[in-house]
Image (cartoon, rainbow, N blue to C red):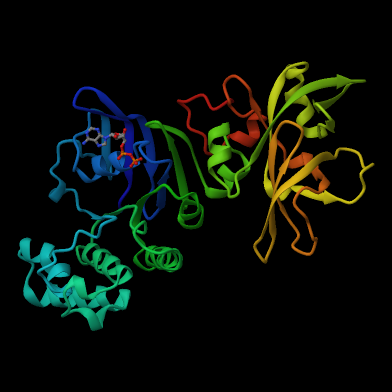
Length: 381
Ligand code: ADP
């Protein structure tokens, strides 16, 4: 059992810099939770407070319901894997992996058994007698993970562990860590600025901005029901498009107007957009929810001009402009598009998301927002 709870946790450095504000997170036993957000938003500070490497300024940290605020790091039964591997250069892989156990005076046979078991899981048995400098970046990161595994911790913490690896190796290691999570059946908390890592690895994602948690939920919940414009734009690549549109009422039906185009609001969204009639809102449309229309006279089209074409093979990304705004669309690669061409796209209005211009909170019906919202930050519900 290893459940981690943060209750109103905050961190102020040197009495001046507020790095984390009122973090409430529940990491269930065996869960893989990813803390994600742009650089400097307080993710690593949160992780370091869990590890005991930073003091907690406010709030409570509990592991398996026991208060940990003042428990020294070595007694928290946690292992951390760092971005820079933090291996001892003068020690062999075997010595690096066994170091923590030797300090704890675990007996030699047990150490040997655990090191070989971890090395086998990570496929690094043949490197046990090498020094770190004779290993590739990926192999070093495996040793760092191995050093965590041998300790049989209650909780694994990962701080941007893949950032120093090249793109291909990152994808491979990402899958390896996910698979490790299933094999070890362990509680894991993982920090990254990369939303793709968050989406692909997490059971639960916690999105941070400026030291504050913006939203918590499963990857698909956050993707489909972002609680605010920041989360909507951060999760998903290419990111969600935001168009400023005016909500208009015509014969009881709602439309969205923006200069040279007009779109019908889908019926399930009408009810909660009513209070925005004659006001501007952000219309959020994901790139994959825009489809090319060869018919310039079709209803609900957005007239656009192509500014960049990026053929990716499986699909093509188009960068497009309305008269005043920019849009990204992900399209079928079988069409041939040219830069400067005038084209029309139809947004899937059922999948549209709306955000308040002032607060940037989602304008969504409550039932869609519910299961995984945080109660304390007023996510537009
Ligand atoms: P992230 O991991 O999301 O990139 P951090 O948790 O490292 O962000 O940092 C959050 C904020 O706290 C940043 O503004 C950073 O400059 C500040 N910070 C981090 N460590 C210290 C420190 N030791 N002293 C003062 N400020 C710090």
